[in-house]
Amino acid sequence: MSSAAPPPDSASFCADLVRRHDFPRYAATLFVPAAERRALLALCAFNVEIVRVRDQVSQPLPGEIRFQWWTDLFSGLVHGSAEGNPVAAELLQVIRDFDLPVEPLSLLVEEHQFDLYNDPMPTMAALEGYLAATCSALFGLAARILAPPSEAVEHLARHAGLAQGIAQVITNLPRDASHRQLFMPQQLLASHGCQMEDVFAGKETPNLRAVLEQLAGEAQQHLTTALSLLADVPAAVRPAFLPLSQVEADLKRLSQPGRNPFALQPTSRLRTLWTLWRASRSREFTK
Figure (cartoon, rainbow, N blue to C red):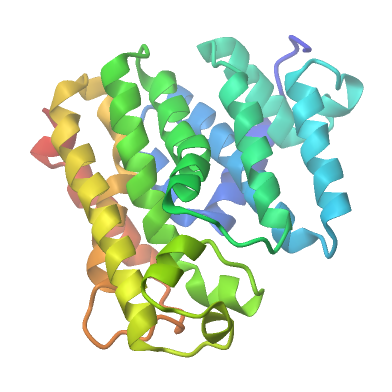
């Protein structure tokens, strides 16, 4: 891995990428010091690059090739081309400056290979494993940028990621169904008598509502646990978990009676900023 510092415009590239494609995480970085914010944006930009692969390829193989490039990067097999990729250059600098482990980054890439195929998520345990390696890992790595690692922080990160990830599964149902992709566990659908073809057809049925209610309940349990664990970690690391305030707002919105689960309901950027600003000043995240 090269030791040369990335140019300033690579930081701007990462910030713009996250702002355009993952505004809640971008907004959450506004409440941390500048040096740590640049590092967090690099981490988030890497996540954006990985998550967007499924929408940028029409066949799995090109996506697998892109993922392999990142895997090779973390193995030290990519050299000159890394400096030409602003996200990679920024992320490598963060790995050096904050002593981030590369194993969780490689595992995150590996787990997102699931996105390239239309295989259904089989069980709730499989979904939790996927989210632990993706959403929870991001929380854990962000926390390492702000404070030394600890078991308490890792425990918090796991529940935070599961809450956020399950909420995203519910939120992304319209897009996933249109792609005939299913992140809702097949086992959960079967237990409620919900047919996959009904989901893909956008049919709002009582069976589907039962599935979504159970998922929302699971997310709420993880969120409640995560918020209670904030008191067990240093104040310096709590800004890494500010996105939990957005998860809380999302779950309230997703649980509204009569909501159409197949209707896209994006949250305005102003409301997202307001939610995160209020959380940043609350006792949960500051004391």
